[in-house]
Amino acid sequence: MKQLEIEWRHLDKDGKTCDRCSDTRKTVRAAFADLVKQLEPEGWEVTLKDTLLTDKEIPESNSIYVNGVAIEKLLPDTRKSENCCAACGEILGSPTMCRTLERNGHTFEAIPVAMIVEAAHNFIEAQTK
Image (tube, rainbow, N blue to C red; front, side, top):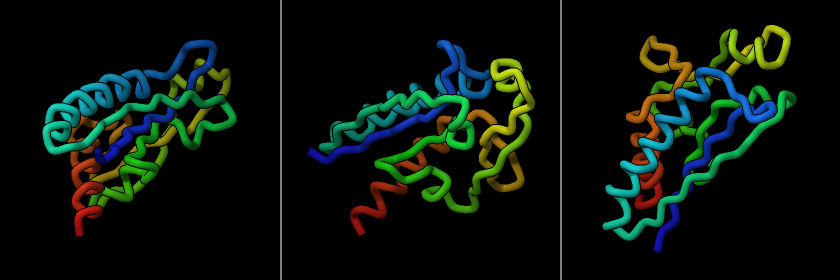
């Protein structure tokens, strides 16, 4: 059976995370459920890995990987960026810049289901070439 791991890395400070990571938690879980339905009949085992980060690992927070590849590398015209995250600033006690994705002129603080699913399919397609 072929393996597909979706990994979501996010800040965890005493069990708390920021608003954008909370929103991404929901979309990652929804994307995972969609991918299980789509891919298991095709012989893929899909797993979800939740990686908790410390305040020293903030640049990695709210990132998603497909079998170790950052989704921005799997999505055309997408790049990693960052902006100020008031919720992380409140949790950590100082102004904090957090990870976002930019695509087609839009900035995504929470990563949409469609982007996660597309990245997974692009990864699989690249493996079959």
